[in-house]
Length: 526
Image (tube, rainbow, N blue to C red; front, side, top):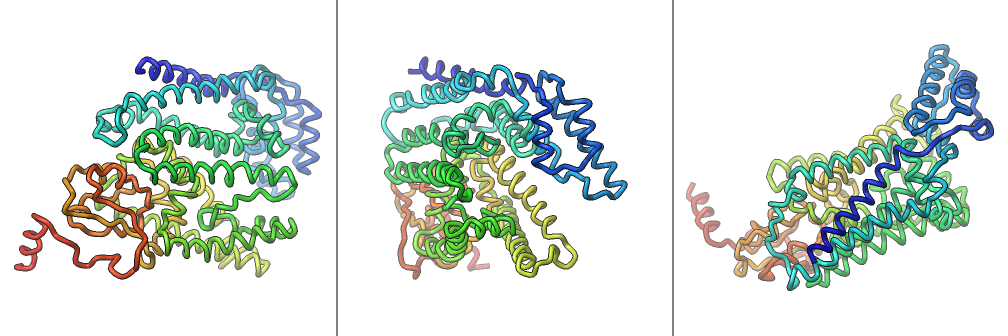
């Protein structure tokens, strides 16, 4: 079985290397017809940019995306610099350089990948899936009886912030930076899923379709690992199946199919303030202009965020969303599971968490309030501050850098819930409800606790669960996402996730055992 695992790992690495290398291969040639169509569709009035591209780029063959991107972005920046200096604002191109470059480069791509999309899909996604499953599935035999053991997780270089973990982190961070800000570099990778995008929505793939498909693929493969690892626990099996269903169905397939029928792209399970641009003017106008279904989407999104979410949190805690529905949580629970023990359990980390996540929530609320004010008042600024600038700052710092680059890229060095714990405004919103007005708690049986520490080790939210268990104290924390792994890894059945009466949920005087009693006596004497 170990041989099969090693072969699978080798196949996976080959697929990953081919996937990465495709960025550097292929040919690109911007034709006159392609450029003329682009100029007309955009209504460009920048003669300097148009002439520069026609004279120096059109008809020229490039052997890699970087050179073509450089020429296009340089032409754009030079033209904009001149027009801004002359204050000819109608001729300035406001698109970001790499976004404009991507729109020109995708139809300009040619060569092996574009002409053999099916073959390279197999050599990348196909080999990656086959190799990963060959590495994962033999664990059913190798692990022996179901259950969680101290299996050297802190001695593995990929899960203890060793060199493998750091290489993985660097790769993930680099991928997210390119995905968010340099999509023109990964045109070949986007072509891998082009046929799938056309089959679903009728449109060619974008970098976001590539990411969505990759997201679902990774979650599905790593869900197999979850089913094997936690096969002794029905809660974990059903929970994993649930997040997989909502991610693939609601976040990926349904929105793409809606587009095919000329409906707005809409994820029915996404909610404000996680879906921070839901109340942006362009989104509201788009939904209203889409007729009855669009208005329903607008009403549903509003009711879902303001009414349904807090009601469900009251009855079931934030776990119903964070651990059963949310795509961010789904990736954290599947791809991020090998790194959950890396979450910092220190008091300092807890303090940073409280200030940071609530600061993001306040930022999101203020931005949304300003956006709605300017939308209904018809102005474009609030106390001299442009609404667009506030939205742009939030989108860059929180939506891109925090949620994407750091939130996922830092799995191998900071644990799997970096975004959920420190940055997600929806988690903060639900956490406030859960802490002060909810029926959810994790009950503990201190008399059965043997202080093995498995619960604290595997808590992805940085909660020192063992300290609660030793005291027989209910765990009622705003940050707890109710993943239930602490209960699943407990060898004595000390921990139990419950929804009960509010009375007695927060224990002011928990059961004290052993040294805790002596400590309380000392404090009382003082």
